[in-house]
Length: 136
Image (cartoon, rainbow, N blue to C red; front, side):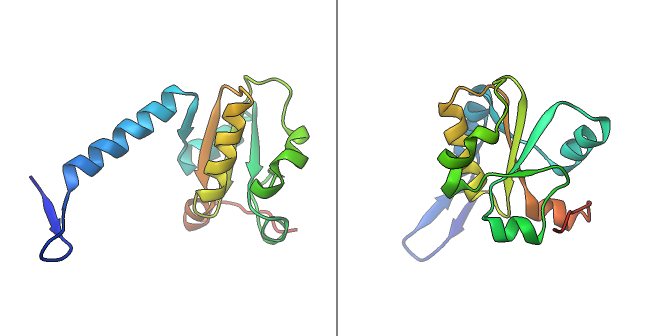
């Protein structure tokens, strides 16, 4: 059993953490929510798949840089801006922010509205891969 020593009195069981993370992710995926990698998202965009891409960053960050075709619905303005989302709740929606916190919160709000195909991506991964970014 792999363990990491944090101090002389605290031990972390790596298998237990991995197991808990895996169970949590699969439960989320079964609930209609899941992570999407940059390659899959890029392929969907390139093939013209029916999807809505939503940037959950604040408006200044969105203006600085965002994915092509993304709309901006900041996490803190979700209730004001959610009217921009498709009325069809079966459409694939992909939320992203820089590191995942704001887009995760927004995905959870969307689940409460009964959207069925919600995904989360990370903008940091997109930038790191050198994929196209709009600047406006």
